[in-house]
Each structure stands twice: as structure tokens, then as C-alpha cells.
Picture (cartoon, rainbow, N blue to C red):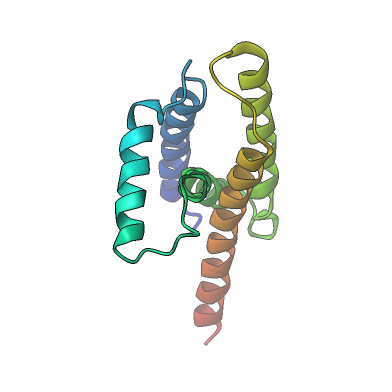
Amino acid sequence: MSSPRTRIWAWRALGAIVVGVVLITFWPTPVDKPFHLALGRLIATLHRHGMPHWITYSVVEFSANIALFVPVGVLIALLAWPSLWWVSGLLGLVASLTIELTQSLFLPMRFASAGDIAANTTGALLGGAAICTLRYVQSGRQRR
């Protein structure tokens, strides 16, 4: 799982994802602004058709932040020593704190959120944990 070819691919993918995350998080206005009303209407429609009412705009936004950072965690864990998979969560936390602080200080149309920090860190940690689990399963197969 950590062949030189995999590592080169992982570095390139991580670079591309970081560029995407930077564009999304440092965009001067909230990236969901053009879709906010439409997404709100979609959620209301889905509620009328049986979707649980606890799934709100905030839940969708929180989940999107988790999903945004899962690939970051996966790639960091692929690049780290296997026993250091948890560094993906730590680096996710540092990146998220940097993002939220920058938004708070320099982007007046954006706002910092502790929830975003929690979601981003969770996503990165889940990605790292997934790689840790895959490596564990793979090492068990190799032992047999």
C-alpha cells in the first residue's frame, strides 16, 4: 500500500485536493450561497416525502465538511508511517484551525465556526482510520 508509485500518486492527489480545499474555504463569499435557498427547498420537499426531520441544512453542511476532509485524511495516512495514521486527524485539525482563523480575520463575508473545525477534523481522522483499517486487514491476509 506504500509503494513508491502509490506515494507519488498520493502526493499528487493531495496537492490537487489541497488546491480545491483552499479555493472552497478561502472563497470570499460562502460557497453554498448560490444554492442555499434551493437546497433548503429540496430538504423541505424531502421532509414532506418521509426524510427524517433531524436532517436539516446544518446537518447537510456539517456532513459535507466531513466528506471534504475524508480524502485529505486518506492521503495523509497513505503517506505517513502506518503507526502514525492518526496524524491525519492532527493535520486536519491544524488545517481547519488555520482556515477558520483566516476566514475570521480576512474574509468579512465568511464566518469562523467551531462546528467546521470539528467536522473537518472528524473527516480527516475518519480517512486516516480507514487506511489504518485497510492496512490491518491487508497485514492479516499476508500473515495467512
